[in-house]
Structure formats: structure tokens, C-alpha cells
Length: 412
Ligand SMILES: CC/C=C\C/C=C\C/C=C\C/C=C\C/C=C\C/C=C\CCC(=O)SCCNC(=O)CCNC(=O)[C@H](O)C(C)(C)COP(=O)(O)OP(=O)(O)OC[C@H]1O[C@@H](n2cnc3c(N)ncnc32)[C@H](O)[C@@H]1OP(=O)(O)O
Ligand SMILES: CCCCCCCC/C=C\CCCCCCCC(=O)OC[C@@H](O)COP(=O)(O)O
Image 1 (cartoon, helix red, strand yellow):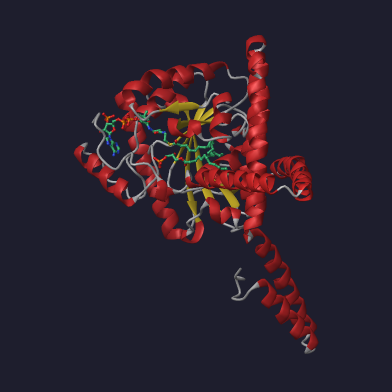
Image 2 (cartoon, helix red, strand yellow):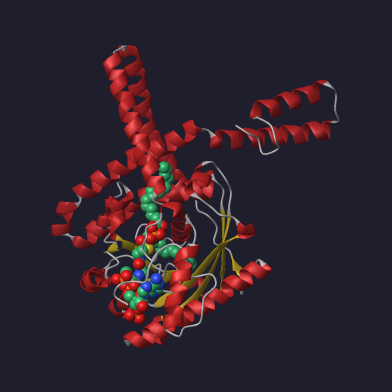
């Protein structure tokens, strides 16, 4: 494995030893020592074995939590509010693992730009979050902010139906009453409304995320959506796809009186970083900057056409913020402290201990059994599990993004 300074971990260790033997000045030796320690940490994070173990912990603990969620079904009939609260805690066990990997394993920094006067409201009210959809780990950064404001377990999203079938996360979402859409308005207009109505008596504060662009940004999708913008006489956007307005409108309609505000959020990464889940797993540190504006829900127009026009204007403003960020490396407004929290790390370590000990015990008994058939069957099982994890990671990759938005929608 290559060390960032150009050689292998062993090469750095050897270099340090040689320096020590040749009697180099102590400050230099200290620096080499520091570099060697950093290098070893980085080396460890880049090892495939570590990724396999992280994947195993996520899958094993996640399926266990899915099973526990299934066991809460009878509670729904007895006490719906209690069942929802239990599921928030169980959901946290899963989603906070991805936050732990982002915040603690990769050490990615998530910085918040916002009005300090609005800061105390975050996490203490229901809100609708509007976020640009351009990065493979935007959902992880979103979850990280949810955790920092104490709403990770109850975080909601308008999500494409395909993700409902992804083991662990998709199955968890079912119990968290996440709103699924088929991205076919004729069907979604009823089902999305119904799901949103159910959230009106939700017992915990929640953030409801809508990626109004409806799909992740690619050059082709951008070009097509700008053709639609032109046809509609709307100004062109440089950094966003043209927002789909129907999901936002139906969300505002159904959560009026339940949510207090829209959090207009714009995410970008410093130095043109192009973050990925594989990079996070390899311990690569990224630098996310999120700009949040709180907009009271009462100020958003009620009628469909007016609400759509309002959203288009919002995206023109967001485009301006992105341009400013690219030009200056900053968003408007001050940086507000929202530090990463220990909860996800503790949760992750506890689940790791819980599922890694049985794995170790199983491996020891497997090897001591000496049965070729059992060993081969176990290897085949591990191979299947690693394919599943690879497929799940693939869901986050923009190169495997859906074809949605590659052509002008038929309902237009
Ligand atoms: C303090 C900190 C604050 C914030 C922290 C930030 C975040 C944290 C918050 C919460 C975290 C919670 C969870 C995160 C975890 C995981 C999430 C991960 C990913 C999931 C995301 C997704 O799955 S995104 C995909 C699903 N979502 C959406 O699609 C939403 C947007 N879409 C819509 O609203 C759509 O309207 C629809 C889905 C409701 C229906 O789609 P359909 O395709 O049927 O209809 P259209 O809207 O397209 O209708 C046709 C109109 O569109 C015009 N048109 C046609 N072609 C195009 C085109 N290429 N581009 C744009 N527009 C097009 C057409 O002209 C029609 O126009 P009308 O004027 O007639 O409407
Ligand atoms: C293996 C270790 C795992 C550590 C924890 C990581 C958890 C991630 C695992 C599986 C991810 C599955 C859920 C991914 C949800 C995010 C995907 C996403 O952003 O969806 C894209 C969607 O908006 C639009 O889709 P298209 O662009 O139209 O296609």
C-alpha cells in the first residue's frame, strides 16, 4: 500500500530506523516518528481487511436491528407513539454507523455556515430540508448534521422506491416511515401525500429532506434539464439541475402546521474534492461546507404554481451561493460551531464488539473443525456477503446513477 509521502509503510519504518542509526538530529527523528505513526494509521485504514470488517459489522448489526424492528410490529397496535420512539432509537443504531465512519474513521470535517440567531432552533422544531444533490456522500453529511442537532433517529427523506429494497438501510426506512416515491407523478401524488399525512402526529422532532433535483447531477442530466428550463422561460442554472417542483409542493402542503420552516441547505467540498464512500472507508479526510438558511414556512406560497415559482427562485439563489463558494471558497454568513458527537463512535464500538466476538469464536471453531466442506461453505457465504456490500456501496456511486433525467420527462 502506498504511503502518501511516496513509499510503503515498511519503507517509512525502514527510513526512520536508518535515520536513527545515522544519528540525525532529534527534531528530525521526532518528525519521522510522527510521520511513521500517521502513516501506520493511514495504512491500517486503507487495508481491505478493515473494510471487510467494517462491512461485516454494518451488515450483521444492521440485519439484527432490522429483526428487532420487525419485533416492534405488535407494539404498533398497542402504542403507536412508543413503537415510533423505539424505532427512532433502533434506526439511530444503523445510521449513526455511517456517521461514525464519516466523522471519526475518515475524520471528515463538516462545517456549518448559518445565522447564529437561527442555530438554537435547529433540532428543536420540525423542518423541511432542501439540499443540492451533487455528491456521493451528501446523505452521510446530512446524517452527520442530523446527529449534531439530535434528530438522526427521526430523520426523514423523500426517497426513490428502489432504495426500499436495499438491505439494512432500505428495510430500516420502512419502519421509520420514510416517504418513498416512484418518480411517476400519476402514482406519487396519492401515495406521497398519504405518507406525509401520517407524519403529522410524529412524536419526535424530525427533518424531512427533499432533493428537489430528483436525481444526482451529471453533465448530461444538466444539459437536458437546462433545455427544459429554456422551454419554460426560466433562467439557466450553472451548478444545479432544474428542480422538480411537485414533490416539494406536496410536502409543503401536507406538512403545513407540522413543520415550522424550510432549511435551504447548500453543500460543497473544499478544493474541488470529489468525495466517495470508498474514499471514506479508506480513511480519506474530506472537508464539507454546508450553508443553511432558515425560511419560515408561512412565507412560502400555498398555490401549486406560486410554490413552484418560489422554488425555482430559491434554486437560482442557491446557484449564486455555489458560484460565490467556487470563486471565494466561502459561503455568505458566519461559521457556527456544530461539533461532531461521541454518540456515533460509542454506538459503532459497541456494535463492533457485539458482532466481532461471535465472528472470532466462529472462525476459531471453524478452523479447529478441519471440515473442508464447512470451510468452503463459509468462504462461499463470505464471498456472497462481500458482493452484497459491494452492491450496496455501488448504490451511492454517481457512475451507477439511474437514467432518470436523461431525457425530458413524459409528463411534461
Ligand atoms: C442545520 C443543518 C441542516 C440541514 C442538514 C442537511 C440534511 C439533513 C436532513 C435529513 C437527512 C435525512 C436523510 C438522508 C438520508 C438518505 C437520503 C439518500 C438519498 C435519497 C434521495 C433520493 O432518492 S432522490 C430521488 C427521489 N426524490 C425526488 O425525486 C424528489 C424530487 N422530485 C419530485 O419532486 C418529482 O416531482 C416527483 C418525484 C414527485 C414526481 O416525479 P415525476 O418525474 O413523475 O414528475 P416531474 O416532477 O418530473 O413532473 C414533470 C415536470 O418536470 C418537468 N421536467 C421534465 N423533464 C425534466 C427534467 N429533465 N428536469 C427538470 N424538470 C423536468 C416537466 O416539464 C414537468 O414540469 P411541470 O411544470 O409540469 O411540473
Ligand atoms: C460497508 C460499510 C458501510 C458503512 C455505512 C454506509 C452506509 C451506506 C450503505 C448503503 C447505502 C444504501 C443507501 C444509499 C442511499 C444514498 C443513495 C443516493 O444518493 O441515492 C440517489 C438518489 O437520490 C437518486 O438516484 P439517481 O441519481 O437517480 O440514481
